Image 1 (cartoon, rainbow, N blue to C red):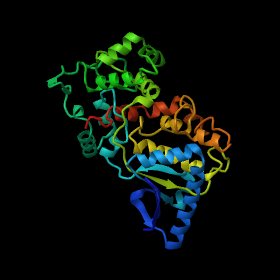
Image 2 (image 1 turned 90 degrees about the vertical axis):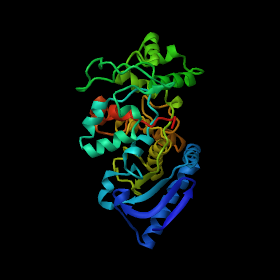
Image 3 (image 1 turned 90 degrees about the horizontal axis):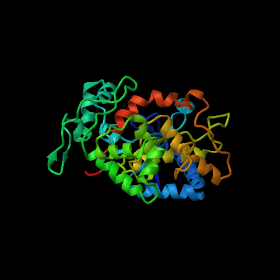
Length: 340
């Protein structure tokens, strides 16, 4: 396989396929042509201040992203960023450190295959593997009481717990954010009262789903990252969106995918997939102020900004958030615990 190391953490592979595990080597001439095209797109991206900063951040992650060619039969599906190795441990390592306990029923519902579920739980924090609360200071906290709170999507939010590794993590996040956002301000942004936030921090009030994501997105810059993973980008080198609703030049497409990759390489994903991840990467409300976004790249090269991620109205609304609720809720509570 021909390959080219463009910069620290960014590799171009002379292979083609749909997924990394289903690829084949290109001929020497084909590989040379593909590598040359990708290098030119990376060069264009690097000329933008934010693009250069993004490539530097990727290089500092200690992980790698490998760009390979998309099989022409799948070109209409566009470019996509994936984990290099698809397994439960990497599923966790690409996510932030959680500040709420997982919902075991949702994990079981999503991973109906027993072997996959067992692999997922084995890789997850130990609190998933027993009904008891985690050890804190050499003592085991009281067992979780019966779940409370309203039913959402057929499931209840996690049970109220005493002070645990999760509420301790929330305290650490709030402390880091405090020079910029007071706890009272955070509570207001999350749609809760200061007293309710204090109870969540103490571990005596369950964090419902809506509040968890409001807190995670509001406090994004102060969250504890996971270990991060190696990634791959299946790259379509020519624009396939003829209506130009997604991108007008290929380097912007590549920049969008590299932002996805950076988030996984640095363990900064909040959701595994879906509208929220795409909105964060595109830089549409409520994520316009995020550091790396496609729209900020567009601004730097004088292109019109994207008002939404997808022209499908179902993908622009809370419809997608509802569809992805169960998956998000199970994964978010199982993110890599940073203490290890």
